[in-house]
Length: 99
Length: 428
Image (cartoon, rainbow over all chains, first blue to last red; front, side):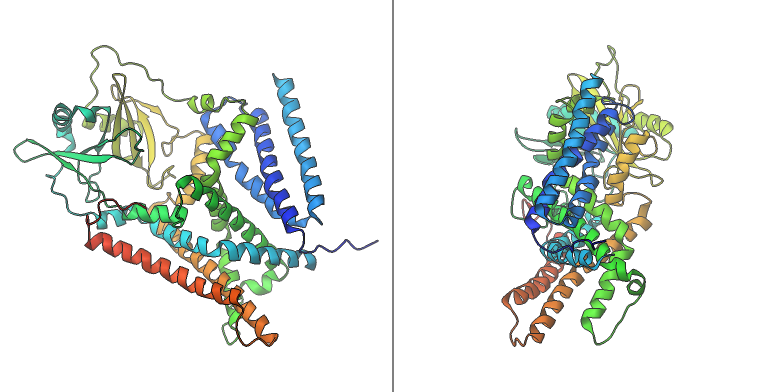
């Protein structure tokens, strides 16, 4: 078996921008899913809407923290864009079925 | 742990640390002091010329006399239940010009003199605690709030990244490094050991601070995006769920007196110590919001929780922010605020947060020292006689900003005590 390719400190702009932008978008999608399909449903309470806003911070920070594990900026962007496509797909499909 | 991952995250740690470290030092040093906001205000408040507040049972006379002489107060006034040096008046109200914010305008206070006549003064609350709080939030950035907060949000994100990367770096040698404090000739080793032990032992505190600060900085922007993407514009309707309805009181209904209200509220929320009641007028119907504290629970604001009360019946109509009476969603939410503010458990937790805050400031200071020390070593090894300019500048900044921050805050506090009211408006 080939040893895994070595991670290098390069292409920071690509990786960090992917983590920052795609991470934020991903957090919005995931909290959207929680808002619609989490306990209590969409129009549950003011507190749930606020909690949803708070949940953005840990998700965003987590994605931003792991984005340096990608081997290049291009890989970071493509993987995170793919994750976003899946989550937004689920969100909009779910909304379409729910309404 | 693969060594290449550790190496990458070491670089990440160094960069986010050196960019955000000094800003975080100021935020933590000032933040630690805000734990004692109320005592500081009490200590710095200038003595008042106002007569001592009437007892709560006579407060209705004070309200009637004040509103008769100053009808402009009727729209929004506050009855202070727990008066003290920092809140010497029983009744206060603000007069704002159009466009002035929540804390803008002029603050008036009234009392009853010994002969029963009405006394009104303009109040100048001690602003030193407020100043330190704003310094904590915006580290003295010379911009508008709307510009400063996203900058602070970016710093908070870097801070979160610094925490994660710091843990990753330490993981391979976690056990041998954690409790080793090698004091001695190797300065860098000693600073590194201190930096590690402080960082690891207060990691939960720091994670809380980083994540909550991201939210404090970006909440408006996040709400805006969520409103568009997830809620198709219905966010304001969500916020209104569970809000007490603005219904007009029955004809001829009379608001309860403050003493009656306090008694009614206390019977519904035993253990909730009422600090103040704010009354506002919605098209002829009076509404009341009560603030207070209960050391058994966490609080939404740094020093208090809230309840909405029907001033005609004394019934509590909204418990979303009332300590100990919230539903699970609201209690979870309050938990986030509480963990940032340290507004639970009373004085022991306050002292704990104060010490953790100072330790945090030291953590960032030691991080900067490590950066400088590493660079010096490298430069010496490469035979340089003079420091590189970047190292020199960073070393000076580290000493200047940290010492300047401490000296500046100390001087401000001293000036607030000994030069009260010399400056008309100490804007932050």
